[in-house]
Image 1: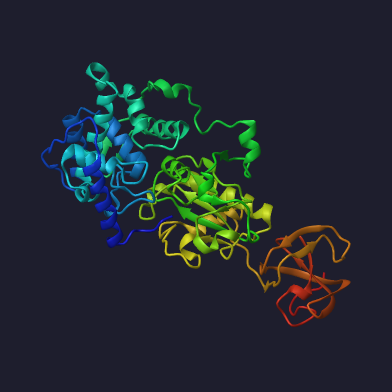
Image 2: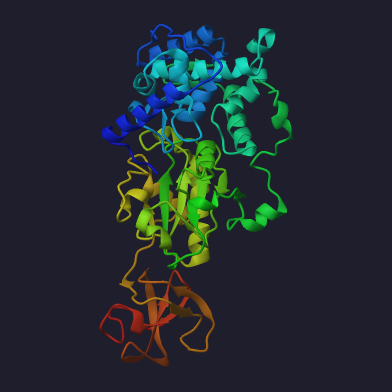
Length: 457
């Protein structure tokens, strides 16, 4: 994802959200509370959490836990996430999540202020959570008990299904248990055994079953399919490229969005920041919608986080993603280099910025290549469907097939069976270092039958 919305689009989104606020009809009556007193500076954010907690009777732990899960307490200058969520608390405006319009109705604050002002954003989220708690009958001593807020928190993201809601809420309670120290906000670790209520019987997405293991292309992945309306079954081109994305949103939120019929986007894999958990949402044989015109030949991997915030790019995420990319590349004969492993921003006909300036490509590619520098190449092939064989013989077994022009490293060459193709006859074969086999020199982009500068095997 990773695109930052231009100002005209942002204004249009906010106007739509404002219209939704007027149309929204909940059980609560609009009460124009005083505007938030905290400023956008970090110290002001801590005050915003304190004030919102007191004003709406929502535990501060709940508010901070949600804020950190959604944004690491960064407002991103009011720019929207991939599913049109805004601010520290991800107040959203999309067909399934109306929290920003709900917040406008409940607080009397303008939608644009709720989106752009961190203190207002926290106040709006607290108002929404309070309204959900009121409807759930959460009152008295239970209202003060963080454990009792589980079902209310699960409602906040308007997840696509119950397992995704549980994934989201478990992450919030995990953050509460670990504590937070970010953006001038401090939350001491507090071990809470959540009262999951009806979610106690919902299997979390991390539960692997024989069926899910069979469906996933990557052994370490959780299979959780996207809506069939958000990708195309099958391929119209051979897979040659792996594309690195950043979600511009949370892990659970991205999974939920790809399951939402309104999204019209998807990726093959999504990776969690905290521990590198991998969810596969589209089979590799099918075409995910992640890079516009370049979808047919690519596999997309989304990474939880935001392009302008390096705190999301953990070592656990890098290592998990690199293992996945290495696995895909080796299974599909894709060279493990930057010509075939690209950022969304490097793809043709795209205007996105992810993975952004904080993505450590050198470290990532080193991990993909088992700690070694990315390979170098001395030739490029041409043609498609070119067979690489175990020996320089037409009867030798096929090791792999090159789907299209590929950079290769020829270690040596030898004479073998005579091949006639492309109007040329040649008996010289090139031994390919990375593919572990031989291909006829006819399909090497060099006019010489015997490649210059390459030793004989």
